[in-house]
Length: 264
Image 1: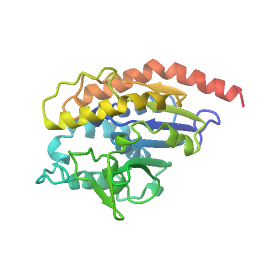
Image 2: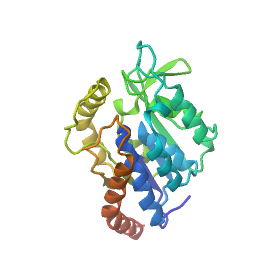
Image 3: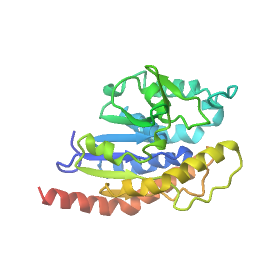
Image 4: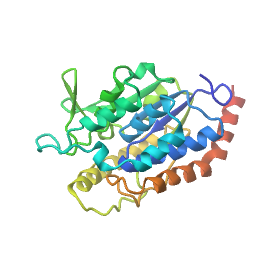
């Protein structure tokens, strides 16, 4: 599958909870300019947006769904043991929106990044049920009950790979666009235990994440630091920030793509 010229464009969509909805705005701008990725790798919320896009869900519809999403639609609280949220609602929602497909059935290759909790290893799903892989990738430790697949216990992809640039390179991408929704400054207001856990992961991953973005050809950084990663109450504004950041970078993206073609 080709996009602009002959370059195989890879898209790395980073983790970020509610801030990850900015990926929708980025995709809208890329689509407007005829830039469609050859492959996508996503971590946590990036994996959800990636599989829905690769399932050919209309972006306007996806935007409307995201704006209407409320905690009651995906939060199913449970007695805390391995997590506060059972996660079955998330799986059901993903299964519904992807029509019960496997990853290999999508219209373009998608890799979903999760973390094997017991082995402390990054795991990349390329095949198998989409709902299981995305549920695993979104399992924020301490908030979601870990997802068990084939006897292994998985938590959020952000724990080992918040922005999977190297994964998308391994998928055969020539030119990588990374979307980093990590806040520029970690200054989130802490109001709940969910915020405590999410902020802790942000802090742990911040330095590691900076080294990974160096491997991308272009990095789009929506200004979403003022929004909570756990409150889904400003989604329209978050998506708008994704659009704004992508529009600011689109000329550079197209110029770099032309230069890439000129060297071939």
